[in-house]
Image 1 (cartoon, rainbow, N blue to C red):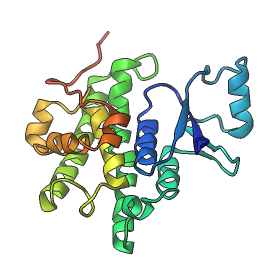
Image 2: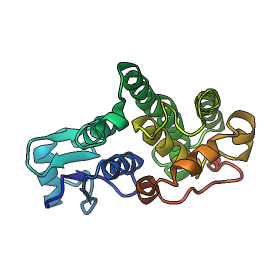
Image 3: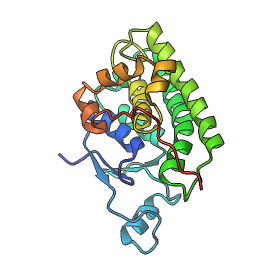
Image 4: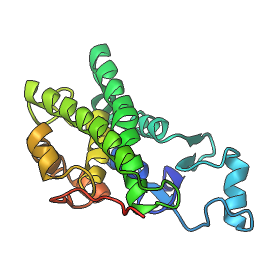
Length: 230
């Protein structure tokens, strides 16, 4: 059987890892293509991608049957969740659950990743975002507040899933951001002060084979990584 779709990306993109996790849960094969030079007009493959996606943004998904060319990571995850036999589980079986799952998907993008990325770029790409202790700490504080909200929700529920009694898009979206943060910002101090249950939550999710295959092992840091001051 032909793959369901191809997704174009740069390597190790958490938004693609989340898409792959949802696709695997839904029994969909997604070909991942990162064998091109991003934003290089002299690369023939990039030129072909731009013909489908003129905005020039990845991740970008193209279905094998040619029916859809789609960008924006959150939209791609939702489409993949809605395209297989586990769509009701992944997106919610009731109107209330569907609303809560969508809320968490937005939260993962707007509160977790939005506040994580400045810290990541200051550490790993200071040519793009120069390191500033004040800027780093401001983003870290906002991220910690968001993680505390995840912690409080888990404490009020079953501690295993954010919505209901089974894994949903809410968990995939939030876990992707937190697994990435665990490599850089979500350190022992932050977990102790704001989110003592989060690591156990992530380890539980990674016992699900499809999530483990997509995200890999949980890598943690004892102390958060910081950039270098000039």
